[in-house]
Amino acid sequence: MNAVILTSDQYNQIITKIDSLASILSSKQRNPKDVFVDNQEFIQLMNISKRTSQTWRDEGKIAFSQVGGKIYYRMSDIQGLLDQNYRATF
Image 1 (cartoon, rainbow, N blue to C red):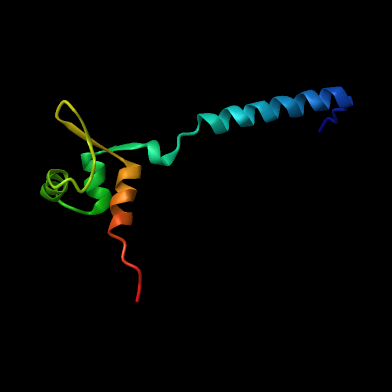
Image 2: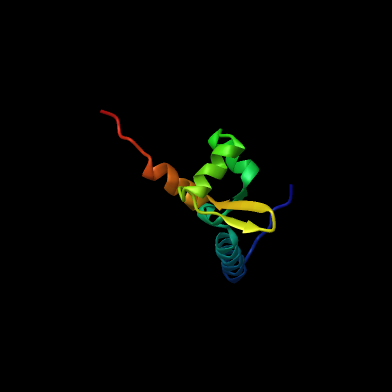
C-alpha cells in the first residue's frame, strides 16, 4: 500500500471537486412525484383491474395523460388519490 501526501491546497481542490460533483448529482436526481407510470404499472401498483382504472379515469378520480393509445399517471396524482381516500383509525 502506498501513502500519498497532499498539500493543503491539493486537499482543498479535491474536496471542492467532490462537493461540486455531489451538488450536480443531487440536482440530477428526479423527484419521485415527477415520475410517470404507465397504465399497466398503475394496475399492478394499485392491485386493480383494467376496467377499474378506466372507470376511475372516466369518473375523474385520477388524472392521466394519454399519448396515442398509451395512458400515463403521475406518481403525485396516485399519491393524491390515496390521500383523498385516507381514513384514519378510530
